[in-house]
Length: 152
Image (cartoon, rainbow, N blue to C red; front, side, top):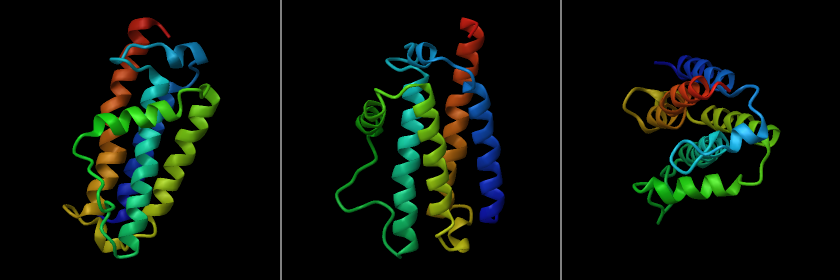
């Protein structure tokens, strides 16, 4: 699948996530309901992975390995916690701005990677799916269901 087609899917799924969180107040964004997290933490975590994998795309574009030497993503929990903590003071407007800016950086970095690296099974293809499309699919339904359940 060409990179631009994957990026169109990414945009569609990202827009669904944005629609699902639209209109939440600061209090609603910080209300804990997803383990120890609220919506703000989920969005901070998504934004953090956008930034992390934008750097991976930049390394791929330079002909380097996507993961820097000594970095291990196999245990994502501490990384996720770091991403959420980094945005712990953000209000609803701030976290939404960071989410959008991080997604733009992620897409811009994807455009620096040669087209053939987005063939199914290749690393760039997997990054677009796991960090973007699949990640949005993981969190959007949970947030939507929480909003329906809580009436927010």
